[in-house]
Image 1: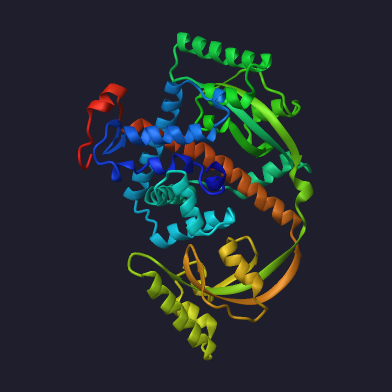
Image 2: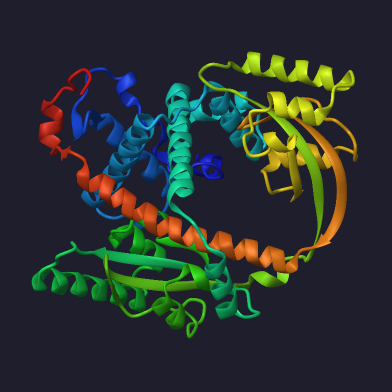
Length: 440
């Protein structure tokens, strides 16, 4: 099941546990999260899903009470994010869920029906799986809104980062183990955390645990159950103090304990690569214009498609594309320009939009095209080969800086959300004795 869901969902293996109350109306309460609850059965199912991932490697898992605490924290954060998103008007339609499930099936070379059968064999109810997909999409949309409203990258920041980077494009695959401490930690808490991180380092050096297993067992980081994997990072995605240190390491090296604002960390350098070598300077760019009809609370899928088909018939009958776009398009950024999107690469607006553009001939009008934004008509105007090496470097650097800023701000936002929430985690006995109140 891990392989089945990994391409789309970071938390999908907690999946079907998140909505267990819909199936089990009478159950113990494991935690109260603001106006919602986490049932004991949800927690048990989520823990069972994690154990299933580690079948044959059970010795890498932490003790049961630690694993349960880690999984509980993930469920709490998911509840809080979904509630925050819904309170700010974030919604996901059934059609979007269907497309996401179709995408999961396609990536796993299966049909949606085969995916459904696989879920049944894994003991996961399809309705619970759909709900988990919905929650993941809602959280993704909340994160996107957060990025759009709070994250900006100036040209000066890009210039400075490129100047500091020089010609190289080195990237580092990192992992970490965090022993957390409260903000105003006492001397005793600091000493305890330091002793623990030194003990973890000693276990790794003796070969009693590999780094990933130690992260799963001992790390307080949200990515503990992924072995502390931080993925690939460029120099500009790593704090300056760490970047200097990592530059002196070889793949496989682990740092000494590092004191940071969240606690003590161990960092491992997993791999190094030169990202600039694989980036071609010559790319195909398309000049196109489009008309968008959105799907929202006032416009159904069928109504939006019918409208875009009517607009296409008008253009095919001789109506001016630019005028129809100015009159009818629902894309505020291009409407005034007659739908003109300027020059862009195939992947710039995502595959759902870029692939149909690439399939057109210059001067050709598309059939209706469905993307996450709604229904489109696209007219490809011109094509060119452009050397955009410098442009690509700037775009990549802007994205890198934005990603780093988003990670920092989003983690701070989650900590604030968690700190402001009412969360009452019950003991096992309390949970068994409790029954969920309706509506709370």
